[in-house]
Length: 54
Image (tube, rainbow, N blue to C red):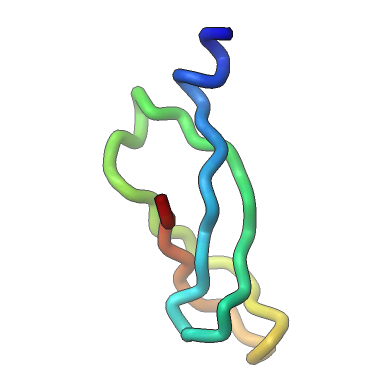
C-alpha cells in the first residue's frame, strides 16, 4: 500500500495544446513539485515540454 503513496501515477500533458498525454509514475520525495519533461508529441511530430497534470 505504501508504494502508491510514494510513487503516485501522474499524467503528463503536452504544452503544445494538442491534448496528447503520457502516463507515468513519479517519486514524491525527490520531486515534490510538478514535473516538466521534454518528450515526443506525435501529433505535431516534435519534442515539446510535457507538464504534470493533477
